[in-house]
Length: 522
Image (cartoon, rainbow, N blue to C red):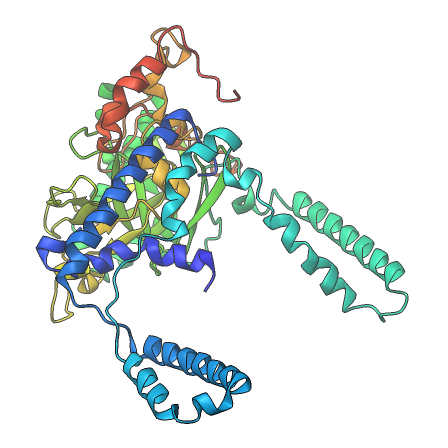
């Protein structure tokens, strides 16, 4: 098992270990000074938890070796005893002639299952406290890692297998030049086709296919799902969502945008088009570009968006049920404006009653099917990235008989509660340390000094049902080239909403003063 596999197991271990023991025993590539302070505090707390686990939990259980461990140890001891016996016979044969039975008895006694406990006296535990100091002195470990150089020997060995083992120097040179030319040709072809493969363009916020092969008549789409709780008032809510997007892009005043008639929205040929995947591009905490692929038919169907409510934290979470687009015509007097509009049909999560432990993962659950706002429509521009939602296994499933109430919502597989895995990758972890990710521009806006350019024009806030004030996605159906800007660069929020960084809020306020300007390069 490689280290990356072990890391993946640890990332998903918390929900599995939850309630495993009785309650009394239940328990970056880029750094800044603040993140190193957090690392110091976390390491100190981790050491306390390890010692507490050894003192309280390990002593409460009579843990013994596994049969596999016993067999391995017994074979090792038998080999060592045989080696010592052989060596002893060579020196004084008569002295060891009468002791084979006693030796066998001692080996057999050692075969018993020994008591085991957590061993804190190892190098891994000893070196935990030195990581923050080493990062301060030498930088992050990937800056001076020898992994790239150590693995380069594989390249030469693979090329050597393609030679005749005689004049291999000249042949290795030719192979290297051929591979370089092929790589250049491939890069050239990818660049020339970049306008056709928009999903590979990291400069746009998202990509949803332009194909209209999979489509339904809207009336038939609704009749086939009649009686499904997820489809209640589907058509009117969709038109209201699309109208608000159109009006908010035309009027800066929210009051003007709110007064609209949904009958102004007409669907071209009365068709709705379906898509299998949506590609979401985002900026990571270390100012790199990455991409998540959303597929409603797989487990990669959960997303996160910014929240405008200070009570529910920084983020809202949703389960994507469908990826669609419609060709609409907005009728305003004698004017008719065509729009190709993409939208996501989602089922919202809501916050669940969490444990009092401040180190626990966030708990969420699905809203009731008949509750207001359980389902909604979302502009893909508002999606930050995909989220990793793990069932709270110890709570059990919502429908024990496996029969749900909504085929559209696929609620037959619902669990009572879910965990939000903030440790799925480095970027996700830094999103929960709100304001500390250099690439998370949306979290910096509220920390800029008064009078900065960000105060000139503040974008509209996103509501829970997915409506937004500043819309950039609307395009003319005849001119489909557009580059939507993600909400990550547009929305302002309060820094003090994040409970995980409450201990350093004052330090952040002192850091981002009027005299201090943000300089990420230094």
